[in-house]
Length: 365
Ligand code: SF4
Image (cartoon, rainbow, N blue to C red):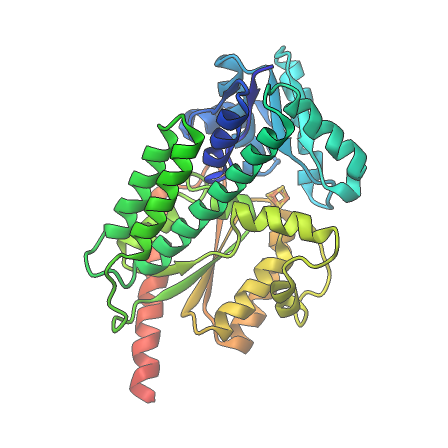
């Protein structure tokens, strides 16, 4: 068995650390790029959302590099995500690719026994003892949490750093170095070292950068190619950003959902405007906008793929939040046709608006 996985933000680094630790044969497809988008768009239904198309592109790249099994997470939720594995399997079959799908689905959909069964199939490829396997999983989970923390600190501190560009440099070096390391213990050590480095970046908290919350559909906010590297763009503009939705957040949320203790703060914040789960992360998006206004953010940027049903609902609610909570919100819709120039212009204009608005508010206070 040679496993491949689709890209979802920085998850590929934790996956690499996991499989290196377990000694399982795997292929990490090239990071999302134009070719993945081209192939995915060519073979997917036109109206399906962008993450689906990019995943098809990732699978084809993985299969061409010898993968015969696809491992992905699933959810039988009310949005299209619940249909992904079935439909993607059919498309690959139609293309005459002979691959197995292992879907790590939500417990409420497949039950605990089936979930363990699927995990066991993956684990059976490893020659490690049970404690060794558990250790590999814990190490990969720690790696995921540390990397999310490094990213989060880098994105927020970019507005306060004394030496412009330092946070971005550390973040990029970190990903490159960890990815090229095949020893999982060393990779984790490297991550911890980078976590210290980012923690110790020289900052000037007397600066007053524009602070923006990045909200929206989880895949589009965590996957840089999909959002046209918005966090990098904002770091270059010395804007401080915060994004709650991360791979480690997602994992904790999934697990805590079993006992209904997931994302309490976010969901409570969304209650006033969207008290029901409508699929995807629409409720979280609404909750994040409310929290951003409470926590003094200057604005929020919502990103979601064209045709994303849950985010269309939250987009319709955001103008009310914007008006009532005095939080400017920019909604960016991405698909395979998104043009870089128009996208950049909208971001620059929005940041410009936030800066002027703040000057105006200060002038009146
Ligand atoms: S949340 Fe939106 S983009 Fe993601 S699978 Fe559902 S409909 Fe598609």
